[in-house]
Length: 435
Image (cartoon, rainbow, N blue to C red; front, side, top):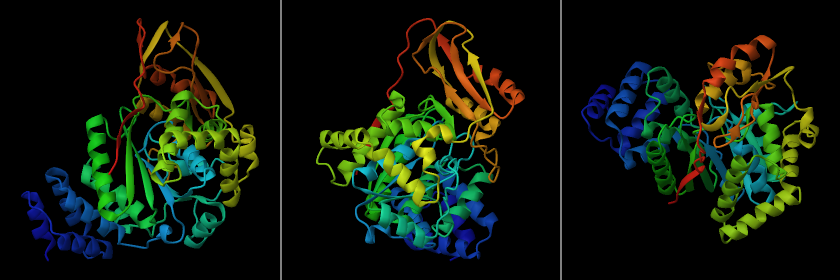
């Protein structure tokens, strides 16, 4: 085969065979196809698209490009959960220990934040001593012993994806449904869980800006899972405003602990409990949603859920005292309360703008490799639909110094839209896509 001929084929709207896709991924991973040719090919895919069979073949080729854990051959059922990213998204921190506390194993490899979306790995590293980087042996040992492991993504899993993503990031072709779907699902197939729940977000704080884009991506990934024999369900959820109230690292972990105690904000708590229940039904641990809801409630009320989080934190070298006493988590030296500039109902909160403001405090990365300050962030005092009078608390800024807290206030206020009339917040869960 000739790479240039395959580029021209897709440029002209052709369809790749399974053999052509396998050849491309193998040779690119081995280094025999240069970046400039693969970049041209990816642009052709971005412009011309891929059908369901091509997307599935691309995913499998990427999954087969490196090591595979095959965790479901050693522990079954074992679930994985993935979010496409958002602002204030600490759902995995609560759902994973909650499901494990209900008796279903969780083998999770989680990523770091990039851009305005936070990363679960960064939030976990708010805990003193916590090791997110694990060897394959340690990953499996902790999963066997504790029925839950929360590890960073391994570079030897789906290495083709790492190379392709780097090219997509610098060539303006991130927003391609087939390429996004294959990127996410190749890593999931390489891990080898038996069940996967996807949280596909849309809105101002998500990469998918419309519900139609999110549904298209969700359907593509559920189809890939079906073709590969991985039981996959996708929830389409709103990221039009930040999720919960905390945006940061340590403060989001503290909010997740509140959720596991049954004391978290209503919106994010409802989403966490729903996704945990969905996983219990998917795996057969519960026969229906009502039974699953009862198991989730029992795990929270008994304390088993938060104990499971403390257990996995300790197993991976972290200070469990910071889970039992969240006030011991890292705290910013400066806290400034920003007041509501006017009286009225909050009509909208620009989640992306809030995320970017949090980044400027040090809670996120403007480029890969930037250091994270786990102490900083924002805590919303009111959400969409709430009524405030001028001067009431709007958002609490957790900063490294007074100047940084001052510098972001104007941009924060610009994230809010106000109404004189009552406003109803949209439901978080828009749809569920099942195989």
